[in-house]
Image (cartoon, rainbow, N blue to C red; front, side):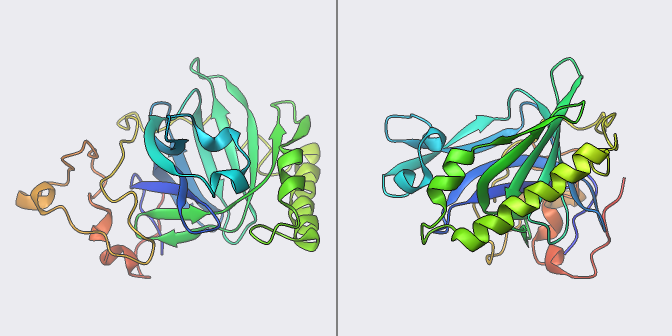
Length: 255
């Protein structure tokens, strides 16, 4: 399955019990042999879990969050404008970030299981350990304590898997220190299509990955390619009305 240039999709972080943990909404820049390149603009819609009193649960250990009642709450992507690359079959994604002034502030390496594609976007399971890489390619580990706490828990990974996760990060450190792709300046000057505004939350954001997106007939009547919820700008809305998006012969996206 390939996505089209400009297509609005969602990236969903999934809990190990199958529930949605977090959602980012964005647009496809390209989808080719290097992977899925995904733009999440500042102000784009997000969804995250909160406790019943409204406190965000991302500050809690995931194990604790999974055994307490939580709700999904809408929000917005802040404070950066972010370009995400998800290489095919890789145990990581690379995020380029720019501040409000347009200055590149560095790369974020999210260690994660290879993404699972579905008609409306991608689902991914986070692996806790991450890397921060500055514009000068200096780097540091992030969330090592959380990673250690989850190692050995049957819900997450054992010691052998943990070693492979860390090795994935170490391979990327070597690339960063050597100035190799994706840390070679590629896309550091990226600017999105000027017609793109922050991406709103589509109505199908929580559709199960094995489900079918129900076409919004009111939005597509009369040949119009727009969404009543603000998802317009010539993105062939909705995303090939689900069934067509499942066609393996869908044209590869490109700029």
